Image 1 (cartoon, rainbow, N blue to C red):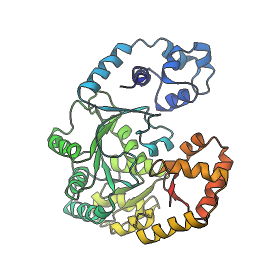
Image 2: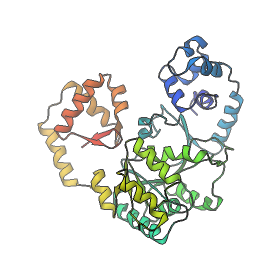
Image 3: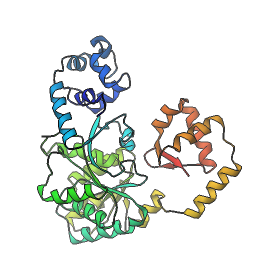
Length: 368
């Protein structure tokens, strides 16, 4: 375990310190330093103030963090802190990204292509057929499928992903010490076993209380490139997730339904109000997201880059950063490059014009 885990975990337990405040604090010091800092220093941090600073200084729950670490070690859970390399980078672009995540599984949470597929718990046959059809059409592109392991569309999406050998991750509204609903325990085990996973920001012994689900939904929306709403009424978790995805500037797709069908009313509303793109097949997602594999063209561009393009010093720095992984968020490029944000923006623009770099949804960039 990381030596800072005790303090990282404790930070999530401090009263009055949520993900937004934790992010502010971590811009000034490491997790351990937050607890050792003087109260006056903490008070002066914008967004913290005397009440929150007092909560930090009076925190005495380290023993609870130690108990959680024992649970993590016993069940080989992977804790993912905001600054960890394996933390879902797309979430970093969300203002309220979780401070710490708990993960079981092998799926790459920073895979090049991730889609959230969500919908009502009481689905129709139409929803089941559409979900299975779309996932089958995505199978050749190795797209990771994210959902909430709930009844209905969520479970259909996870099962269809497994059937088509796609990695699938369930984002939970409770701790990893149990599965809700319990009927999905076998499904959850199959997901972990087959290069998928289970992810949550909730500690062990956290029950799936009603207010946890909207909190969970922001992770589903935030860590995906796009959100697909299969079937939903005008109210419910799927509509909340779609709104969150829009707020994070993510692409949202919705499957249209009959105007007389209450279970499609939410999808039709999203499409009508330009909050989602109308979807009829997976190819539309592939086209909008730029997920089509064009190997010959890709190799041709690679050869052209190597033979003809001379990079400036700033451009070379950015290209070297992008070589490290499949895609990199703009915030990480800014921090790693050591360049000003305007210099980074100018260099990336030049690299895009030369077909060296591609812009992805969620302010992510990768080599073309």
